[in-house]
Image (cartoon, rainbow, N blue to C red):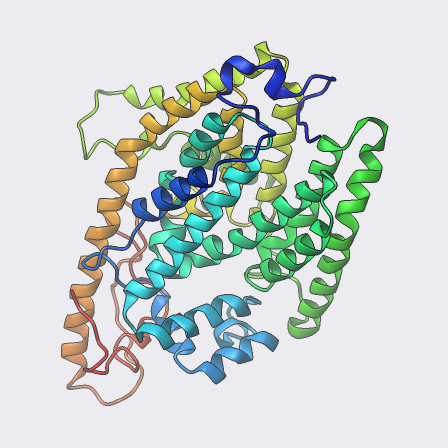
Length: 451
């Protein structure tokens, strides 16, 4: 029986007052449909607000040739040797599929991200429902699904490196939990999903670590170490093969440059800022929808504070430690990026780690999760509008660039002074790959799409 709490009494029996139904009962199919539909509707790419940003242009131009896209299976992503060392062939192939379906229409790529996010939300619900009651599991899943910090991973086409990869990481994690429960064949599915995650983004290296933590937390009595080893070693071996293959391709393991190690102060500071901003989006967003009094943003910390207090009062130390450990492990690949989370657009890095942060709310039952949804509402609406406004702005500038480019020879067009993000700093705009703006496939009149 899966447990995050120590002792002989499982959480759904010890805390029946906070669970509307026993957590070990299968969820109704309608609950899965509800979460999937809610997540998809919340992030659905409306036709007049979906547009390419940042290095979307590079990704789509590169993937428009299927044969070229396939070379990422044995080379650097987008052929960017010397600039970055990324092995993400499934991401490139997903853009090739998008192009085959809809050409350069950004709606298709944005819809792909929203669908991936909705599927991940279902996996989060299936995981949460194993430890808390169905009502609490649904609320906590919605907290993660609607987290404003997730915007960049869903509304930015290239942000799928997080939203697509997390589908496989969460699927592998769910299979690990099922293996711990004794479900036959679950370890194979955990292995397969792990492979697909590693083919999507290097941050999937966290899967064996998460499996080890869950094995130790959920294993029965004296067999915890044996359980952890049983579910972890196949994933660890898979990771070893992946790292060897990656080193053979690039002659290094790093992405942006593994030698750029931040100082401990910058790392801890970035970790703290990113965590607080994920938990409390009122700190940086929400006031444009409704003008808020000064310092009212501090209320945003109330849900997590309440959850921790309830958890401590109910002696749920094992749950708190386990979830925080999962969160830290999920953040390990971000060690070079966390010092830069003061830049709001970089909060998307916590897309996967945010699952564990949302899980901490479940320790306090349904009430902290419900309060968190209330805190999320205004920032969510504001960030969606920020991204819609930025998309319209980028589309208008792209149209002007295409117009000017008509008088320029067919050479790469370098465009100066394009803002990397909007004035508020919440949305990526243009800063990488802008030489593709006026070149195929974007320059073809039959395919070009402006709004």
